[in-house]
Image 1: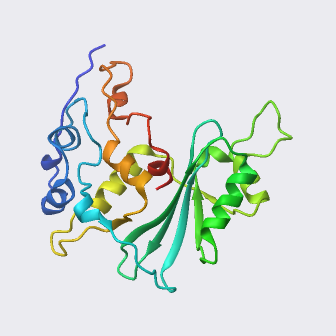
Image 2: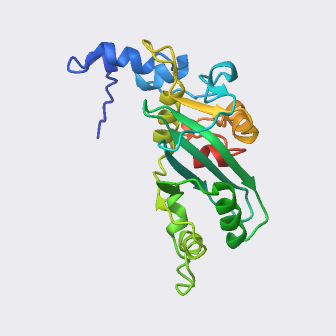
Length: 231
């Protein structure tokens, strides 16, 4: 049985607004453009968030107005670190990461207590958690899930989107400096040092190409990414 493969570049689709394609891909690296626009099987390498520039995205702490929306994101861990970020959303839809929690070797009750202590009197609209935390151990159905344990101790959450590629693209879009505004949509307070370190060190996995799993080359290296996962 003969199988033919046709490679159709994005620009061949006349129904797509090419100006919009140019706008979206302006911040892509050469490897990303080859993969996303030309459909080439390339191995992505290097830093993932090349758009991140401390001089642009890191800002001094300022009092956040009470009427701004505030949300939290949690990447729970037990053996691995737990990462939590606090984000304020301005009326112009700008996101400011204004606090972080990065710790390990604690119980869920202790994590929940630390989260509530850092939150203080802030009015949090909602908290997003890794959807994997909703799973129960099938061997022990009587045990609660990690998400249920957080709720038990007063931290109510809703499952987030666990699609890594979607999340990376969303953050890259927020980091990108707007053509007309000349400003990004994502900022980090200068004292959120752990998130800043992760932003500057998050890299693509550079293992060899695997013909049986072509998507492997697009996976980030799973190191120092707990706050980024929470984001």
